[in-house]
Image (tube, rainbow over all chains, first blue to last red; front, side):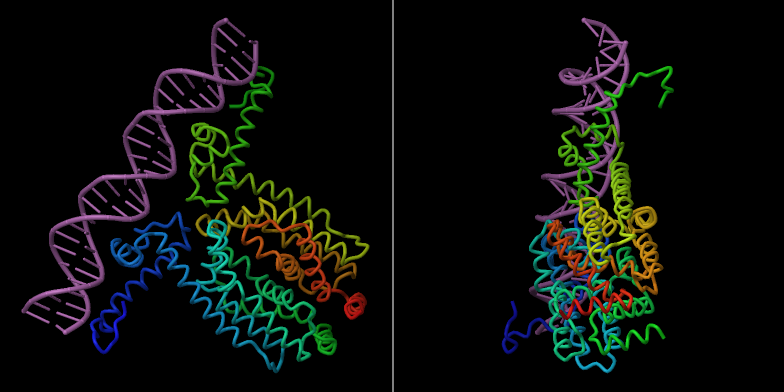
Length: 230
Length: 230
DNA sequence: GTAAAATTAGACACCATTGTCTAAAACGTC
DNA sequence: GACGTTTTAGACAATGGTGTCTAATTTTAC
């Protein structure tokens, strides 16, 4: 559809903006409604109304409900993926204080990838429709945030080689790190409440403290012990 | 409706058994279908057919869909609750080997309360309908398996007072224990696959090892350290 | 300003589902 | 075997959703 700009600069930015705005508006509303009501419970009318758009416009852009659903999933996954990469790139590879820096990283991870709207959507989605759409689950695991575990494992492996951590199984450690970060947030996230920044920090502190106690090398572990008993 | 048994022993056990069997069959099928399709996606026809019962019979017993749904939730919660209590009562209060016994307990917990059909149902349910039916979530948290954390905290507190563990915050430790046990299983449970007994045991071992490293008192911790380096 | 494209409201056929009703059949008790 | 209860199949109206169509209106491009 895209024509070379030299011959046909027909569709100006403005026109695309108009269409694009509608598309985005629909996508956003659809994500919201699908997340709230599930696929079967969501109606096109509701989505259209929430997007401030006529029902017909929805059909013009996305032919049918299934199609819209797929588009929403793809959109959310792309965004979540980008956010995940961006957050992972802030992993403390040369930490000043490993515990502090890991905790700060854990907060960013919760905030950007787990507790936000996209994270919530994907969790609900994979949980409720993952069995019926196996390719959805597979795509989530391989190209989406599901691979977060693998990525973290690689990062921990580097810290371990530097002698800052003492880890035997990086994949297990990565999964445990994630699990610990989630431990205090699960109640909130399950219910759909976004935790406050303070809650996020407390959860991260608790998680990292336990993680460090389990995986810090002897020297640092001794340090942590004295801190604990102090 | 119930009449005193001295005047009207009309309905014999047999007749009740017939009705009871139908009721249970419907309840079971409904749980299955609601779990698979969600509330909106489940149809009475499908439930009736899966229960080998006519649609009218479903309506005779449970008037309307909402009512049936509530009944299913209550039934599953009661069963899950009973199973939870039963499993918690097997917590190793006087352990021979704390690590081994905790791991065995973790396996029982996963097997009986988390990875079974009821656990899966409740997780999907609370995740997908918890926001729309707040009382459902509240009931899950207070009277259902949601309080598993609190119960575990009390048990850990006893171990801690005995000097077998060194825990500062029992609630945090309990949540972390559960999170660690789930860490390796989340992928499977999210997808809906029931993990094998071997996977359960590996997951439990990994979880308890990390938990012990973080919370074992100095003497035992030294022991674990030597084991680790050996 | 004009023409093309996009958007809108509304009507529409179609289908699935809910919940009711009825008459026949099956089951249980006595 | 007669009676009351439960179950069943099927028809049924009502509802709400999907997806299509059309004609009018608005937006955008030039």
